[in-house]
Image 1: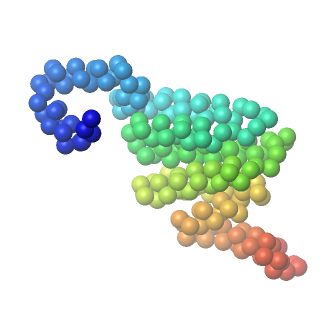
Image 2: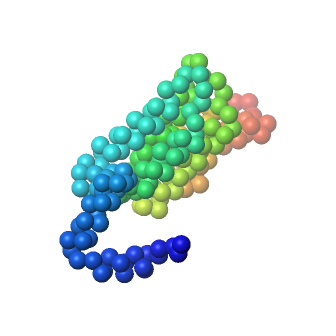
Image 3: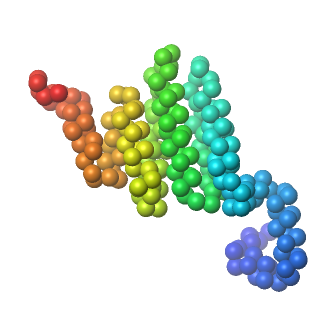
Length: 193
């Protein structure tokens, strides 16, 4: 079976009368959940749809005995990306995922995260910052990213600050990074907190 290209699809749409086109859209809306959610975001309240996806992410963090499944969370975010009308909402969901992951790590009975879990947090954080920069939404998200780095635990703070520094050259975390580097490298000098 030959793959339908965008050009052939446009040709097909151009052959349809207005009523036939409306029928096609109604069929898509009735059969495909992503189409329903897309139009809910486009025509209705995008916040309601975003909240539903946040609830799905919340469910992954309910277990107190295991790490949340990063693959499941990635799937939720990827599904959201398919219907998101604005990248602003995608960034919001990515940062929400990072915040939830860091909250989970800070629970009193939580164990040291696996490298894969830590990498998943850093990947989501970097994706959010890169998208923020690409979409020129720094005014909306840069302070939130700084707060996330500042409030993350010692285990993650250095790596998150390095990700932040890769995209922002404002020097906000330079001193903290330098101190941590000297401590890790063995160049820690007494009196240089």
